[in-house]
Image 1 (cartoon, one colour):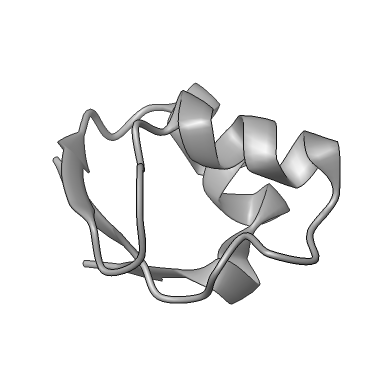
Image 2 (tube, rainbow, N blue to C red):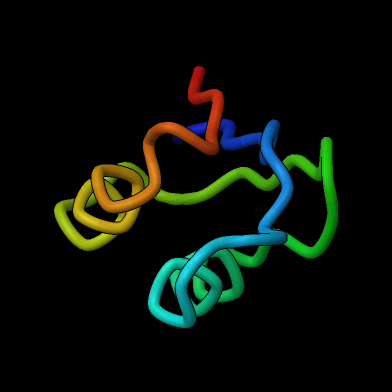
Amino acid sequence: MLEITLIKSIIGTTQKQRAVVRGLGLRHLNHTVVLQDNPVTHGMIKKISHMLKVK
C-alpha cells in the first residue's frame, strides 16, 4: 500500500496533470490517500512526482 499526499497546489498546472491528481483521488492541498501498489499507480505518481510525497 502507498500513502500519497499532495504537497503542491494544482494552480498553474496543465489539464493532464490535474486529471492525474483527480485520478489518484486527491482533492486539496495536504490531502492523503492510501492506494494499492501497482504499475498503474506508479505511472500516475511518476507523471506528477514533483507535486507529491509518497510513503
